[in-house]
Image (tube, rainbow, N blue to C red; front, side, top):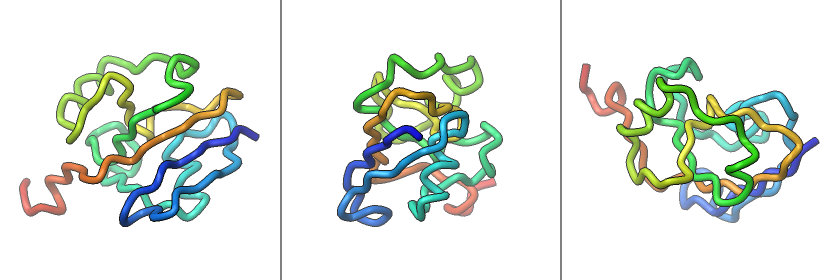
Amino acid sequence: MTRIVVLPHVELCPDGAVIEAKAGGSICENLLEHGIEIEHACEMSCACATCHVVVREGFNALEPPCELEDDLLDKAWGLEPFSRLSCQATVNETPLVVEIPRYSVNRAKEGER
């Protein structure tokens, strides 16, 4: 198991959390399994940017993002140099500290097609 520290998020995780994550699963899968309801509008198929997170510690231990993930990240609210789509970032043995941005861009939820 790998430790993921989730920094406080006003709606999803007000007090923050420390979870024991399964290596080989995505950050998104692990958050959901521990009751942290991060948005994932495309059902984790790398087709949106609603599951955007900022990896505050452990970023360099993750596999680099693919070109599609990089393209989608450009649409994420609050993009930072250590941003990842949580559905695409696979947890390994390195502990992580992640921050879920306060907002996400969910065009389907906002009525856009």
